[in-house]
Image (tube, rainbow, N blue to C red; front, side, top):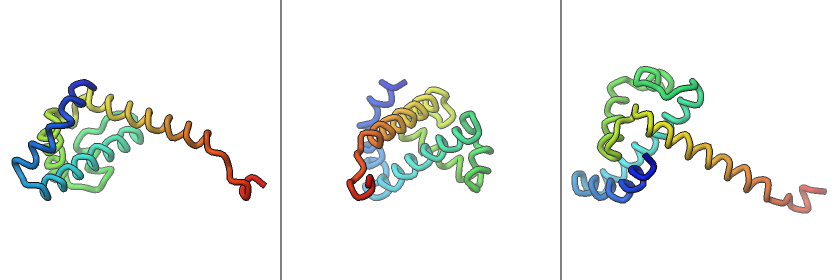
Length: 116
């Protein structure tokens, strides 16, 4: 799955631009990223990848809006938002990011003013 997502990463912006123009493409790409982040947040909270109803309830959205967002995810990534491989990939990246952030924080030295 990672190879598939990484290989597609370069092409969706081009597809969006061709289909919708630059400004609309940027807005839709932001909406896709936001929806994926929110889905990952919800998954961590409830313990499994959310379905549309759970996602809509958690973020106080209509199921119609969730359906639109999930359609954008499908258009951008070529997969469904409920794809378990996509869920695993996103949650793994979040875990890697958190681990990297923790290492960076440990490596920081407290300024002399704070340490004293």
